[in-house]
Length: 96
Image (cartoon, rainbow, N blue to C red; front, side, top):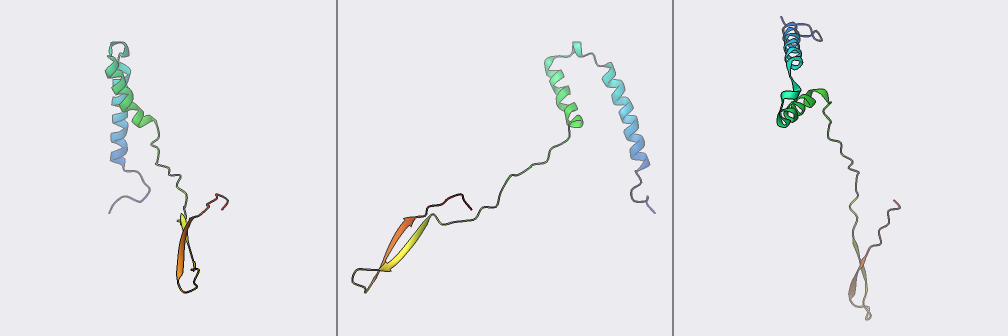
């Protein structure tokens, strides 16, 4: 029989609380004036991962319709016996 859904794991909660206490003690003992610039940057780099919310990738993709760039115009030739094909560019406007 396991724990009831929605009830936090007691062991995990205790470990997190103890770890938080240790971290608070270590951070309070840090003397920033004795740290090198590299050490300060590394501390910021690690600490900000836990302070700032992680952003999800947001895509601004819109649905695009495939439209032809050219249109083929097929008509009878001058003799009326054959066909002629003419390719013209399509004028595309953004009014859709």
